[in-house]
Image (tube, rainbow, N blue to C red; front, top):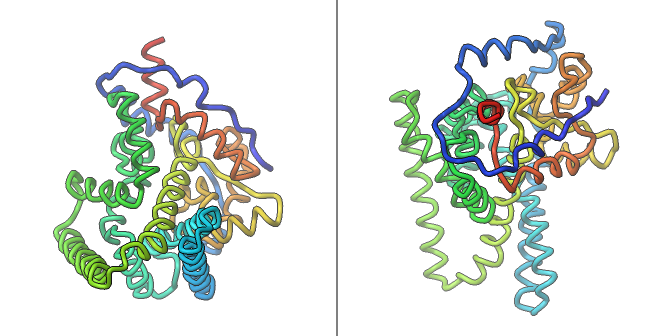
Length: 354
């Protein structure tokens, strides 16, 4: 059963004046959350949480297809076939997007049964995308624990009415267009402002930042010495920048424009009824089953479709945003972009102005 979805963004396009935090008190939010309970039999819970090694061939294919698209981009660029270059960048951006999605699964320790493989893969991927694995884990656990509240570092600044519409629009623009730089800075901001990082985590984060500086310093130094800046920009930076934009837009599809008082109400979920949609979802690590992921964060990505079947067929999920295609979910997000916002503070803000 696919639950009906309301347009939750239409009423929130007016310009709010900057104001103080009007978020509902924590105890009231907790009471709201307790009203919605998802029940799954204990034996089924154990089944969907069992981790099996993700197919390595798929991860290799992501790299091969990314660099194949990069090769076409370079060839067409020097051949003067710029429309082909643009298409190659877009294709490369799609396969480049799989890396932060895989990084997300490494951080949750759900890619491989043996944790050292998750650590090695997560550290390598984090170095490549300039986000330390431990820094991401620190921020992402707060994202799960304080979803769409002002304590959610991944949705800053969209969760608070105290930030002006102009500032939020600028942030959305910068995160989309310059995502490959903005996203690492967003996680660095959380490292500098979080109050729940242990001394051991700070040491790990420091070592991972050193690794990032050494890797990128060596790479950029080599590019400079070889005089290969044009090749590097066309064949790597351009598709990676597009992948960063795709990653930002995907995050917005997951949460932007929603303002409920519990996890399911603040997360868009997609259950594809067609084989093509199901295949594309699998290739993207089933990240569009995002409501299910937020309910059971330790479920491996290959079990998320089954988890959605368990959650979204329950009466308790009847008013949770659930869609039959990614594009319908994306369209609902797009309608919130003129005034980007997320979280329950907006419901309370407009209720207070009524």
